[in-house]
Structures are given as C-alpha cells and as structure tokens.
Image 1 (cartoon, rainbow over the protein chains, first blue to last red):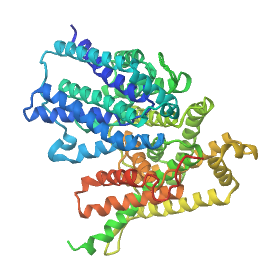
Image 2 (image 1 turned 180 degrees about the horizontal axis):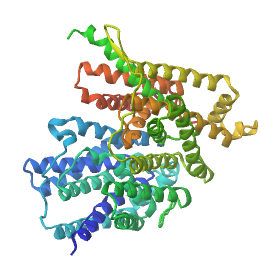
Image 3 (image 1 turned 90 degrees about the vertical axis):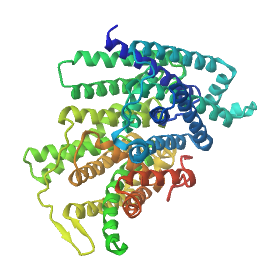
Image 4 (image 1 turned 60 degrees about the horizontal axis):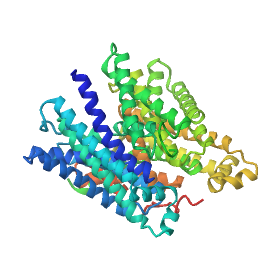
Amino acid sequence: MHDYLIAVFAYIFLYTIVVVSFNLSFGFTGLVNLGHMAFFGLGAYTSALLTLHGTPWYAALLASGLAAGIFGAVIAAVTVRLKEDYFQIVTLGLAFIAIAVSRNWVSLTRGALGLPGIPDIIRNNLYYMLFLFAVALASVIILYWLTNSETGKIFQAIRDDETAAAILGKNTYAYKVLSITISTFFAGIAGSLFAHYINFIDPTIFDLEFFVIILAMLIVGGLASVSGSILGVILVSILLSAISFAFANISPQLIGAMRQMLLMLVLLLVLVYRPRGILGKVDV
Amino acid sequence: MPLFDILPQLMVNGLIAGSIYALAASGFALVYYVLKFQYFSHGAIMSIGAYLFFAFLNLKLNYVLSAALTVIGCVSAAMLSNWLLYKPLRKRKATPTVKMIGSIVLLIFTSALILAFFGSSTKTIPAKYNQTFDFGVFTITLIQVSIIIFAAALFLLLWFILKKTKLGKSMRALADNKDVAQIVGINPEKIYNYTFIIAAVFGAIGGMLLGLEQNLYPRMGVPIIIKGFISSVVGGLGSVPGSVAGGLFIGLAENIGVLYLPTGYKDVISFSVLLLFLLFRPHGIFGVKMRDA
C-alpha cells in the first residue's frame, strides 16, 4: 500500500478517537471543553516520557489514558459547577497553561526542543495503521454504546435542560464530571498513540492551530452524532489532502497556509449557515 | 545584584509590557462588554495592524500617513468580520460559544493569510527615531515612552467615550439590557458596528506599537490576544477599566517575577496568575458577578 495513503488512514483513525471523545463532552453533554487537546497532549507527553524511560508501551498507553482521565476528573470536579462561559474560559486557559508548562519545564520536557526518538509500538506503518484502526473501532463502539445507554440519555438531558434533569433526581454534577472523565481518557489514549506514531512531540501539540482542526472535524460532522464525527474526520482529511495535491507545485509553507485558510473558511461557513453540520442532532 | 538597582528597570519593563497587554485587553473587553462574547479575532486585527504598518513603511510612505492608512485598514477588516461573520451569527441567534469559536477560527485564518502574503520569516519595522534615554536607575527607548503615552491617552479617550458621549451611553445601555435599549430607540446593529470600529482603532494602534517593539511573525496575533484575554479575565470580564488594570498587573507581575524566576518563565507567571484568579476570584479584580444581565 502507498505510504501516503497509509499515513492518511492512520491519521483518520487517530483523529476519530479524538473527535468522537470530544463530541461526548461538547456535543452530547453540552460541556464545551476547549482544553480537550490539552488532554491529548498530556497523554502524548505521558506516554513519550514513560517509554523513553523504559516503560513498555501498553503500560504507557494505559497510563496516558488514566493520567488524562484523572486530570480531567479533577479539572471537571472544580469547574463544571461554574457558569457555562467560565467553564470555557478555564478549559481554554488550561490549554494555554499546558503550552507554558511544556515549554518551560525543560528538565522534564526539553522545552521547545521537544522529545525525539519516541519508540514505535509497531515498526511497520501498515500494521500500526491497522492497530490504530482496531483501537479506533473499539473506542467508537464503546462511545457509541455509551451515548445510547441510559447514562448517555442523561448526558443529553443535562445538555438540553439541566434543571429538568436535576428535578428528575439525577445528580447532574456527577454525570458532568463522568462525561469529562471518559472524554479526556480517550483523548489521552489518542495522544499516546499519536506520540508513538510520529515519534516526536513538542509544545506545538497544544497550539490553537492544531485544536481548530479537531474543532472543524467535530463541527463539520455535527454535534451529538458519533457517525457525524467519523464523517467529519474523513471529509476534513480528504479536503486537506486534496488541497495538498491541488497545490502540489507551490512551496510547502504556502500549502500549509492554504490548507489552514480553506479549512477555516469551511468551518466559518458551517458555523454561519449550517450549525448542525452534516449529521448533527443539535446546533452548535 | 542589589534589589534596588534593578527593580526600577523591571518596573519600567513591566509598565511597557503591561501597556501593550492593556491595549490588547481593552479592545477585547469592550467587545465583550457590549456584545457578550470572547473576541479573539482582536488579535487578528492587531497582527494586521503590525503588518500593514510594516508594508506601508516599506512603500516609503511617511510614519503619519502609514499609521493613518493602517488604522483605516484595520477598521475595514473589523467591519468586514462583523458584516460577514458576527452579524449573520447574531441573526441566527448563535450562542456566545459559537461567536467565540468563530473568532478563534478567524484569528487562525488571519495568521495563515499573513503567512501566505508575507512568508514565515520575521520582519522588523525600521525604527527611525528610536533613541534611548538613560535615567541612571533605568533606561527607556522613545518607542517605549510612546507606547506608554499612547496607551494612557487611549484609555482616557475610551473612558471619555463610554462615560460622556451619547454613543458610550448607548453602548452601556445595550450592555445592560438590550431589550430596554431597543425600546428607547437605540439601534443595536449601529452601536455594534461602532463598537467594532472603536476596538479596531485600539487594535490598529496596539498592533503598530507592538510591531515597533518586537519582531513581526504571522501568528503574532495569537500570543498577544491570549495575554489580552488573561488580562481581561484577571481584571474582571465585562469590565473595560478592569481589563486595563489587568493588563498592567500581568505586565508588572511577569517582569518583577524575573527577580525570582528565569526570564523564560514569564508565560508561566501570567498563566499561574490566570489560574489563581480562575480558582479563587473568577470575577477578577474589578468584575461584577457576570453575565446575568
């Protein structure tokens, strides 16, 4: 199989985990966690540091999910009681704090130099891509099952009318913390798999530029729809690849700028004219 | 080195950085105050200001003409963003979250646009008149003096507009209660447009001053508006004077913190201040308990 195609599929599977888990908090529960990628980055750094110090990958993978999930639970426990806009501010602030810490805690993260030489889980890219497919499939099945379970219905009830959910005797606080915890756990897992795929991470993993790609996938696909998120990931990935091919004869730096501009334009158009995305159940 | 030998210099540095942060924060806060959403694309306006100023000066136009054209360019960009993005979002009654996401997207779009036009290499605005004044305990350049003077003058102007003019009263009325403001005959769309224009003038001047003080690079709007955002949270979201105080507070904290931490930790200081405020005083220094109105 062509190397480029393998890479495209590998990224699609990675992003699927990130976007579907993002949809769990943002779309299904109505918690706009703007720091979702901070947990992805936390997972990536956790896994990178552990494996670079000799921990086997499966332990590091699990530790990444747990680290992100536990950290997410703590943040959620403190913040989900806040008003909606404060919750967004705190989670966005979290992303910025992650940048500052990863840049400046040089003895641990090597700062802006990043962490090179993160070991492969599977050396062969094709097999690793298939491994990513398996993990993504498992994650999607779990999250799909969760969103259709009673718990998932309660998440959506909280999103639509928290007071009503509370009157029905649901502990909305606990459910919101649970939603963020599960969502950030999967973000951490994806971060770990990402780090072992590209073998190098640096603080740019926390940048807004990366976050908006995930955001575009989520919103284009539509909120509160697992299949929508998968479709969003695929369509945005195809769009980005198509732009790269269409402008293949210009400088790589300009291609990067074109990709970013066109993707942002698409996202703006969806925000204004099609807030439900393609398969969304609720408006953004 | 004895503390009192370097403290004056650190405080002056803090005042300079704080003035720039306050310029970013005041435009951000003004839009938040009147339109109730986090206006991250103010960072885009500032980066456009810096790059337009650079481009006009490169065309050998003089400083005053370049500055005037830059302000016009930034105001046009802000009006365009209102017309093409924020107004349609208001029309479909989008939540503040959506407007904020839109503004972040616009910010990233602008840095890509600048990258496409100007390339990724850093640019420097040639400083023709930049002599350094030495006061013994501290030194300061002419550009830095003008940053502080411009910032102070603009804040007085903003205060005057908000408190003393009819436009300012309409803005405050809209901020307090949109429905009542409309009943007494205030046209919200018109006032919103003026709000974006005033914020853009601040953004243009802030961007030019920032461009004179540091290098230009395509995504320069992102870090500066993050600092503006932090300043306005620390000062109290929804409070325009608070955002100015927050900016100065962050600028001073970052620079005086250098006494205890390496220079690279400046960002860590401002983010730690942000975190402490979010946890213990989320309505900021000046802020009211927000967004009930």
